[in-house]
Structure formats: structure tokens, C-alpha cells
Image 1: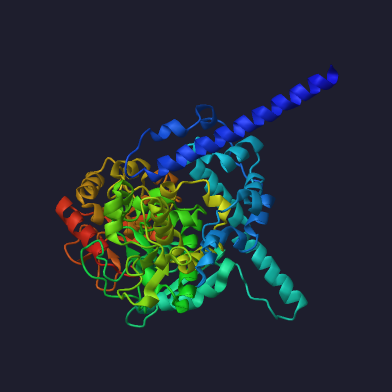
Image 2: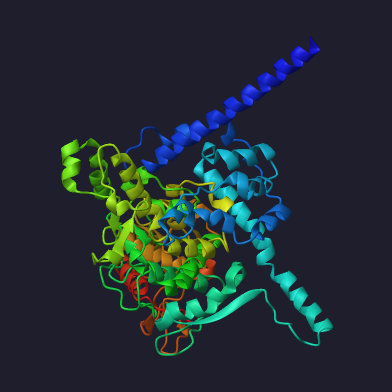
Length: 578
């Protein structure tokens, strides 16, 4: 009887484990389906995926990360095994199955490494297998904890200084450079070229602090000292220059005049006005180092919690998250193409036969060429050019076309981009998010147009004699509220070097934003003179972006305040001494 009881107990445990595993897989499949339809049709509220009893668990844990485990994870290899899905298309069409290989948590060990980074083992497993059970804001905080723990090692300037001193004592001055941060000089009129040459070679060392010195268009070194604000502006400008196509208008509706030496577009615009890999670069191996560099640049922005402008198409974001695109993802790339392709399923036999389709595509259809020569024909299966599409195989044709368009086309560029990106952000870390959540992590919540003026006012500090009850401060917030969304973002960039507000609100901005009173007038040499004087030049607002500090003169009227503030934020001045 003991043996029977033991077998029964083991059987029940086994069945329970199978039930939990099957339920988890089903729940995750439903959630993936919901994510694909997020921008089209939401069949339930986002809160439905959250486990209420988990939302309060660990809320007061200010140290959820085990530092040693994060260090191990960050020092893993290049994640080559994780990029099997991005394996490039071979000339042999039979090799295309490599592209369809899904990332496997079981094989890469990344999930175990991520789970071991957290102190709470139960919460770690939730984050590994069902991260959507936690609110997005909570996952962002945990992701930030991973970054902060990694920065304790990669940006520890004290350790770097001590290592330099040891090198001085033991090597007679050789190899004694202070390596606490990387210092680069960038010419504004060759922004991309200078950045590519000086930063791409760093690889994983790009996780260290980078100190930027700008040289303006006149060849003069700008006087601003980089305490963090200069680098934020540099990265913001570099990403706009490198990712946005030359034909894309900027926020003012003006054509970009400076491409920083970049001669081709690395990304193109989809019908939904999002960015995808430029498929016209297929077959051009010279561009792959550039895509690798762009991956590092975007990874650096996320690593430093700097929100940037580019809005990527969801299929590309899926690739960054290590997920395979399916037919339903095509609607998030080209809705019209998706509708036309899917309509083949409902055609009659005669209608399908009349189209004369075969299992092949021309590269012009997928955006890689305008020519229809035989060199631009892509067979979807071996011998596909001689296999007609019929009512019996049309579903296979639809899925193969979708797979070719979203997973195979541009695979080399995507592979290079992922290689650079994962030099800074390990793959398991970003799996805490869905594709549309990952876009929020990159560029913030676009549901907020401009900035949250009331939220910023609530956390704003004042110094130098200013107080929120004074008329000038009341005028100031009225002026900011009257600005257009573009002007509000320009003001935010003027003050903080970043045109997008923090993902978790202004209360998460460090240091807290502050408005400091400065003298209203100055003489021709820039020296302050008494406010009551009728002579002298009225100063413009200035800022110290590394401190999120706005230096505001005490203007006598609201119209003057608005005029001077607009002039300051619209001038696009560099970092010079005020």
C-alpha cells in the first residue's frame, strides 16, 4: 500500500506540474496574441494580465539585485546562440530554416542567469516566465535595478583610479591611463562620422561613462564641460541623425541639412510611419559595421536611461526581444499588404488560378529593388518558381511570404544590429517587456503630447530667490502650458538635454529639476548689473543640463518672459559659457 500511495502521490504531482506548464504556455500565447493586436483591437484591458497579489510583493525592496550574479550575466559572451533566429539568408534556399529557429530559454541559459540575479526566487521565476503578471512600471524599476547594479562595476571610477595607481607603481608608467571614462571630441558638422570612428571600436567598453567635447561649425571647441548633459544631447542628436531617413521631416517641418557624413539611410519608413531596416541595403556587406554601431548606440541610450525619438515597427522590436514574427505581425508593418495577402485565403479556385502565382517573390515587392530581372527573384521553397499556388497550398504560400518579408529580408542587418545592441543590453533583460512596452522603454509614452506640465510643476524646485507664489513663476507655467507640443519638447531639451520626459514621470528625474533666479541685466562684457538699472542688456534664459537647472532672469512681464524663453529654446545654441 505504501508503494501504491507513493506512486499515486508522484503521479498527482506530475499531473499538477503538467497542468501548470500547459496553463502557463496557453496564458503566454494569449498574451502574445493580445500584444500583436495592441494597436489594432484590444479584446481585454491591460490590467487583466496583472496578478493582483503580486503587485504589492516586494514593493519596499530597495535592493532586489544580487550584484555578483548581474556581473556574471553582463560578462557573458556575445549571445551568438541567442541570435540564431537572425541567421542570414543563404543562397541555398534550404538554409532558410535557420532564420525560423526560435530563441530558446532552455538552451541559452539566459533565463536561469536572469532569475539568479534577483534576491526573491519566486519573483525571479515570475519575471522569467510570466513577466506580464507584474505592472509595467514595476518591471521598469526592476530593469533599472539591473542597469544600476551593472553600472556599479562598469562605471566605478574609484576602482579605475586605484588600478591606474597600481599600474604606475608596478609598470614604470606603462599602461597607466585613467580608464574610468572614455573621452571623445566630436565635430558637430561630422557628427555621425566622428562618432562611428571613435565609439564603435569600444564594443562592450561603451558601457563606461563617455565624456563628450563638441567642436562647433566654426572649428571652435565649445566651452561647456560634460557633467552628463552634453553627452545626453550628443546621443539624442546622433540617434536623430543616424536613424531617421534624410527625407523625413523634423519636428519643425524643415528638411534636415546635416547628415554628419552619412550617405545612405539605414532605416526606412513603413506605411505606419515607423522605422524598419532599409531593405535596399540587402547584399551590401559594407553597411553591416554601421548597423552594429547603431545597435550599440541604441543600447547605450537604454543603458543610460535616455529616451530618444525613433519609433520602430513592432516586427523589428520583436527581433530585438528574441521573438519570431508571424503572419499576424505583418499588420503592424504594412496593414494593406497584410489585408491583400490574407484575402487569398477566401478566393475561389478559379480566382487563385487566374492570378498565376508561384512560390516566389520579386525583391521589389519586399522593397530591395526596383528591377524585375531574374537575379531579383526569391524562391520561397526550393524550386518554387515552378510550383503554382493553388487553393490547396495557398495557406502555406501566405505564411511563407509573411516569413520572407519579416524574418528573412534584412536578416543580415538585423543580426549586426543585435550584435551591437547586446554588447550593452543582455538579451534576457529585455524579455521582461512586450514589443510595444519596449518601444516605451526606448522613447517614452507617446500618449503624452509634449510634456506633462502639471507633473513637472509638482516636482520643480526653486532657488536664488524664486518661490512658486511669485507672479513670474505663475507666468512661467502659463507660458509652458501655452507652448505647442514641439515647443514643450524643445524647452525640455534646453533644460535637461533630452526632449522626452522620463518614462516614470518627472518625479524620477535625477537630480530634481530646478529654476534658479539670475540677474536680469548685464553689461557688454557679460557682467551682471543691478536689476533696477535702465541700462544694460537683458539676459536670455540659460541652463545647466547636467543639473537639470534652468537659470531664469526675473523678467518684468509675461510677454517678455515668453519672447526670451522662445528665443532661447529655438536658437539651438551649443554648450557655451553664459
